[in-house]
Image (cartoon, rainbow over all chains, first blue to last red; front, side, top):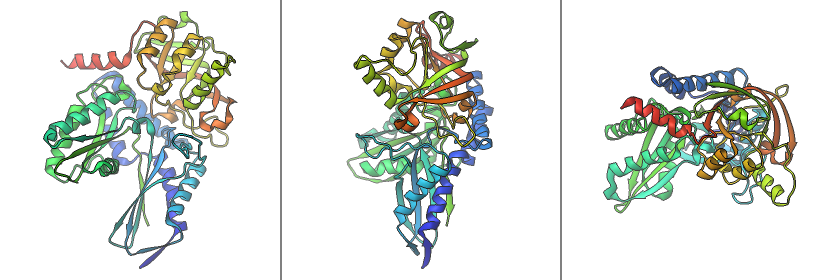
Length: 279
Length: 185
């Protein structure tokens, strides 16, 4: 048994909120760089260059890459041999409160979906915990902007719709989103599970680095085919036209019911942010 | 084509602009997004004046991050404009000439743009650090209680923007992808 203080969790979450918002993950940066080199349409290529310049300026000026510094989605893989001294959830919220304050990040959370009063400190965080073997605690902060989140979709398909039905739904989601989610987009795709599980799978898929394919060759092929079909839509960077509509996508799956084929697409943007620390 | 414009703008200033052109915009730009638009509609319903001179004005749909000490503004890229669709035609009919944001607009907004000789310009979505570079002054002019959604008067210099909807019915979100796809066939 290892003891971890709530204060250490707070410190880590605060640091991660700031880091995630000012420095793009290396895999996303590489995908954007690759797109810059391979995009043949001049306007699209210029637009991609500007998106990269934005990152440089954000880092130099300690500015958030995007002004929508998002809802703080916090994923914790907690070793079952860790004993947390103090209140775990409160420690995470306090980390968000501190990180968004000290980092001059935007406070975008309202306390109630209909009465809409801002909580002024970007809490509460959206916390997902998984208990895993070991005595470590891995914390990943994913600040999720809502320009892209609002374009996400979920469908309860029929088993007979099969892989073609899933592909149609995913491609249609990107087509309907058009210029709204700040393309080039990144997609987290969930297939299977139940109504709630499939949405969680889609969100979790956004944690996977863009250069890491699904370990199952069947789904790796599906990921490749989806990326090709989406990049044939022509939407392009910012929706101005071009090849680069999607920088990368990840499919995650779960066992499901004989009667169902749930599919969810969590849309993210070229500022797909995540930062991890292991305590 | 690239055009240099200074606010307030006239119908004549905007007439040559075509979807796909770029604009370097200078002068006063007012920030307003969801909550501020709702309050503006309430003011108009009560027969009261808007909190800024509307004739020839430019509205930027943005909620910036808080500025660091010594800085003018934080990160300041556009939010999705479609959420303002219900309010924009009314403001355009009153004289607002320029909308700045990102993302698709509905048919009513497109018609109001043509009817009023107005224009819808795209700022770079997700490029808040870059967009902030053209902001030279910032003043909160009303509804401070709305935080990042309060109405600010920005003084901008050469803000880089792209024409999406022009006064002649052009729409870059249709013509841009269509041109790329045509070059591939």
